[in-house]
Image 1 (spheres, helix red, strand yellow):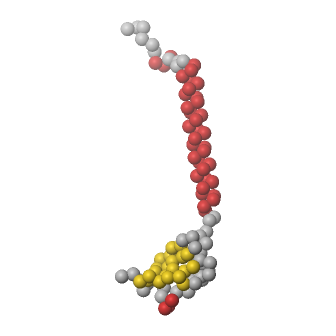
Image 2 (cartoon, one colour):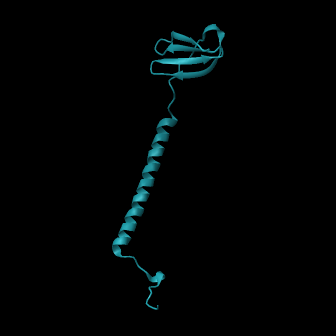
Image 3 (tube, helix red, strand yellow):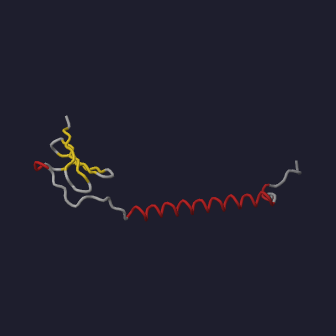
Length: 100
């Protein structure tokens, strides 16, 4: 039983130490890449603003409760349970939908 190696004196083979260093380096590079991508996304979208119209005139003196937009239109849900859809380019009323 005295022939058992002492765990404190064990040295892994050179190839295993190189592999361990490469895996550690890969982990560090991947973490740096994820941080770089996240920071670029944050910088890109933190200053982005939705292209909202400056003034929306709702029919009948109603007030808006929700807003959404598409590529060439925007819609406002009013407190009178209607959805009012406007053309983005001209600002003219396209369609009014009554919610039952």
